Length: 177
Image 1 (cartoon, rainbow, N blue to C red):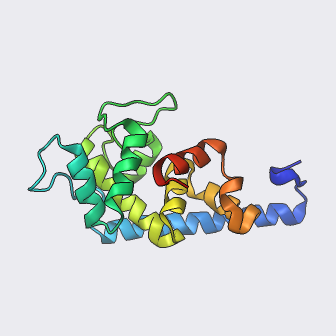
Image 2 (cartoon, rainbow, N blue to C red):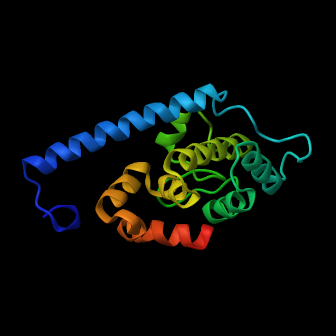
């Protein structure tokens, strides 16, 4: 049996292939958007923030990218407790807990807190603009956009119920819902 208790016949496999083509298309759009915004490396500490005042930097990066600074600050607190040296048991690195493969794709050094905060804020802005809400942006950031799309397809308006339980807890901890 496959995901959500369905067997995988020919039609389901075609749907899965279509899903992954669409997901790849969105990733291309995402990277194109980021490049059009100057890439991930721009940003970092603002003139009003000290070089190690990461909470201030997170709020400034969120504001600069059009996302709620309070929610973004809560997200980074959930990710690492604002520890720029954090390393998760799953291999996520730094203050924004960026996975090595994501850091490579984004062309950022995840150990550089200022660059990581800027990259995470830009990513969250793109996810929010693309998928329509900060909760959905959090799902993308935590579990990947393919998990969000699968959850939306499987559960519709109740999409959170189809997310991994870890991601459900993550969204609740950051956004309260």
